[in-house]
Image 1: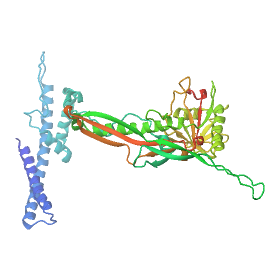
Image 2: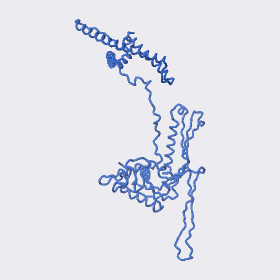
Image 3: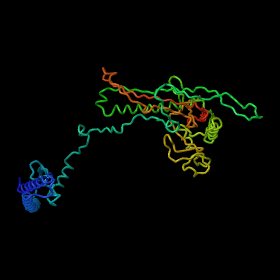
Image 4: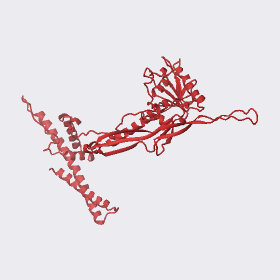
Length: 448
């Protein structure tokens, strides 16, 4: 070890002693040093300054010596004639194990002392690395570069959700007991008439009703998982349960739209005997569809004496409306309500699944991908529903769907069963004609 190395080593030891004294004071939550600590720190500071001066002088001398040696070698090379042949030599690396230079000491001196010689050695070392060292990437460290699995972004299966259930129904709490709900529905009403002559009998008609029975239906699903998957995996049970719940919600929405009321299914909107409007066309356009929308509204007002609240359609049908243009290629459905002239529909301008933000004839448009797209003899038709939300009644049990976990059913196989279930009931049958269903060949798959 050179004398300069020993001086640098002592300088590091002095700094370590000062740090130890100051850390002890800080650990005891003191702001003042004792007389003994003050004397020790003063002595160490004085010694540190003396050592810094020595390091600076020795470094300058070493730099001068190196430059002189380099100059002598150049002169000797010029003065000595070369006589044929050549000699292969090997120059040691700047920071070879047997070198007098220290990479860490040079790094310190180059940064804090502006040591020219240290800076030169570091630059030479960098050049050596670029020339002599092979580039190494992550492929050379397969055992250390660990794949990262972003479990918080794990994506369950895409589901259509429950737009109709959320936006266009009257929601109620399912009663705590029973598998049927019964509602009295008057089918023959009272009568009134003008009394022609005083003391004549006034009009009288006996009322009559029929019982509207609404079945409570069970929607459920299950998944078997190995205990190893749950105990050794990351969030697998919650991931699967989340998918089951999303599936449950989608099935509920599809049932209240499309259920036939048989074999455990709900009697959905489509099968509830609403006003039937047929849109027949082999070359459908929005202009041809528009009168059918008006007809659907007026039939509700004429037959049920209420005003409808929503259009419910498949996303592709809304796109069909948005894509339509007039004879001068201006869109028929445009943003900014009350702003455009002669438009058939308006909206916020951005299409969103569910509550689309668009409206026609004063009614908001709800988009729902649970609406079928295989109806009709051509099996490529969807339908448009004009609904009165207060007459689309949905009952759900509070907290549903419920998630159950059974450890014992497959205990012999280390299998754990996850079950999701819930009860619900729906009817659009109190006033069936408060809803209209538009169907027909004019609602075949649109092209864009």
